[in-house]
Image 1: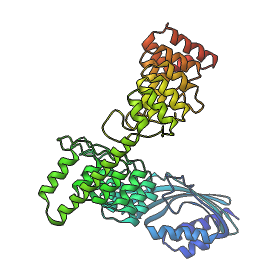
Image 2 (image 1 turned 60 degrees about the vertical axis):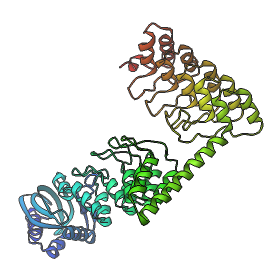
Image 3 (image 1 turned 45 degrees about the vertical axis):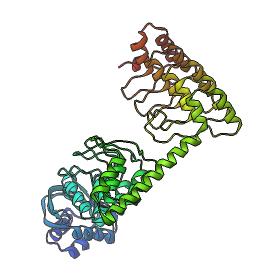
Length: 494
C-alpha cells in the first residue's frame, strides 16, 4: 500500500471512533486482526475490563461493547498522526467516565497500527493506565463500607474482585467491614471477607473490640463459628471495658452463642475492668430484665453452670496432672501402669496450669523423674500451653534444667528450634537469655540452629554476647560452630 492509502485508512478509523460509528470503524479492521490494548497486570490494571489482546474482528467488537457497557466516552480525538509506509503512529485524547464510580479519566495514549490491503492488520496502544485504574477504583473504601452496611452482597463481591481492601475501616465508628458484617449477622458477607483475607485479629479503633465481639452483638452462631475457625481469639479482651466475647454474648442475650463459646473453650472465670465476673453480669441482668427476656438469662446461666461443671469434672479426671503438679512420682508411675492418659490438657481456670499437659508442667517445675516416666508413657513433646505458648523444651531451658533438657533433646520427635509466638525465641534463646550456660551448650552441641532470630531481631549469638561477654565460653562455642558451617559471623550482630 502507498503511504497515502495508509493515511486514508488511519484517518477513516479515527474519525469513525470519534463519531462512535463502530460499524465503519470495524470495517477498517482485517478479519484476522491482532489487537493489543495494553497487557493487564494482575491485581493492578486487570480492573480495566477491555484491555488485553484480542484476535479477529469479533473479539475486538466485544472489547468495544464491554467498554460502552460500563463507561461513557466523552472525547476520543486524534491529536497527532504520522504515517510511514504501511504503518501509522498517532496519539489520541480520551476522556471517559466510568459509570459505576461516576469518575472520569482524561488521558492521551499512543497507538501504532499496520495496514495492508486497505485493512488494519495489527494495532497496539500504549499509555499510563493509572488514571483509568483510579477512575475504576474510585473511592472503593467508602463504597465498600456502604455496601457492607447495606448488606449489598453483589456490590461487596464486585468491589472485592476489583481489589477493594477487605480490611477497610470506617473512620466514623472505627469498625472494619468484617466487624460490621459480623455485627449485622451477615453470614454471606463474612464468608466473602474472610475468603478475601480479612483480618480477624484486628480491633476497632474506639473500644478495642474484635470481629468476634461484634458477632456476639449480632447474634449469629454461624458467623461466630466462621471467625473462630479463622483463628479469632475466643477470650480477646477489650482494653476499655475488659469484655471477652462471651460477656458480650451474655449482655446481648444470645443463649446459643454463649453455648457455642462454652463448647469451644471460652474462659468462664475472667473479670471485666470494672470488676464484674460472669456471675455479676448474670445477677445484674436477672434483676433488670423481665418475662421472656429474663428467661434468656436463666438459660444462659444454666449453660455457664454446665460449662463450669464440665471443667471441674475434667480436672477431677486428670489424675496424672494432679500427681505431676504435686511432684508425686510414685502416684504418676502407678497411674501410668493403670493406662491413665498422660496427654490431658488442663481447662481454662485462670490458673498456672491452664492449657498445660502433664509433661509441660513437669518440664517447667523440674520434676526430672516424672518427665522420664511421662516420656516413656508416650507424652507428646510437640505441644504448647495456651498461656505462654511454650513447648516442653522451652519450659526446661527457661527454667534451667539440663537433665530434663537432655531427655527432650534425645526424643525422636523433638523440635530443637521451635520458636515461641510470644517473642520468637527458640529454646536456645531462652537458655542464653536466662544465663543457663549448661543448657545452652547442650542445645548447641545437639545441632540447634544458630541463625534464627527473635522478634527483637536477636540471634543466639547476640544474646550470648550480651549475657556472657564476647570472650565467654558460650559465645566462643557459637563462633566455632558458625565457622564450621561457613556462616558469616558479621551477619549475627545488630
